[in-house]
Amino acid sequence: AQKITQTQPGMFVQEKEAVTLDCTYDTSDPSYGLFWYKQPSSGEMIFLIYQGSYDQQNATEGRYSLNFQKARKSANLVISASQLGDSAMYFCAMRGRNTDKLIFGTGTRLQVFP
Amino acid sequence: GAVVSQHPSRVICKSGTSVKIECRSLDFQATTMFWYRQFPKKSLMLMATSNEGSKATYEQGVEKDKFLINHASLTLSTLTVTSAHPEDSSFYICSAREAGLTDTQYFGPGTRLTVL
Image 1 (cartoon, each protein chain N blue to C red):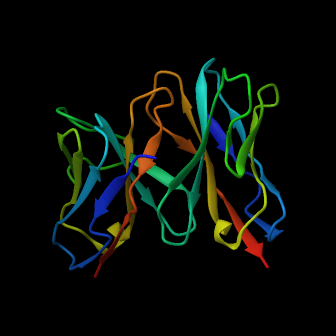
Image 2 (cartoon, chains in turn blue, purple):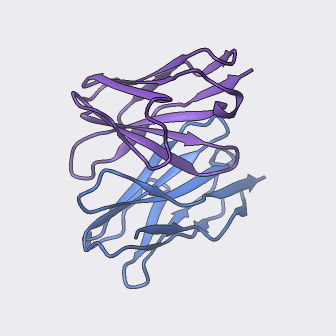
Image 3 (cartoon, rainbow over the protein chains, first blue to last red):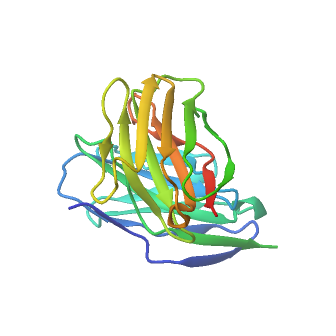
């Protein structure tokens, strides 16, 4: 069975600092994809970044980077130079091989303070 | 990224009535769309997978006759909550899968349903 674990229910970070949001996963599929989404208070789920299990390099998208450690089955999201607008819920998700379904973690609420 | 719209954003209805929610992919074709339900401060719960031109695939525990899904075209899926009751009040959010290297799901802005 596939499972995503986010152990941090809440995180605080000061503006302009970097923050790491943890995500570990469990799967028996040899091929899978990992996703991070941001959900602000408005409710919309915003796609941030994708990492494929066979990707050699860690994914990066602007201020977002994914610290992918395959042996540890972790896919932590790193946000650099935090901004007040980064305050939101962040969900880690995984899609296994031969499936369309996304399995979501329980989320981490990030609060950025001035 | 790809854009998905959802309408309405909020709806309040009386118990016993039916409510239709639309999900559209605006700039790409989506053979597969998904419907989720989210309770306050909880993660997303997949309700069903909507396939264009065929019947939806429902997750275990989701009533097919209660939550009717129609995927009429490559850009439109609808969710109808039939005979709504207060316990159906929730945040409903759809996503559309953009076929490609990553098959990323892009989400709509969600619909907050309140049943009185």
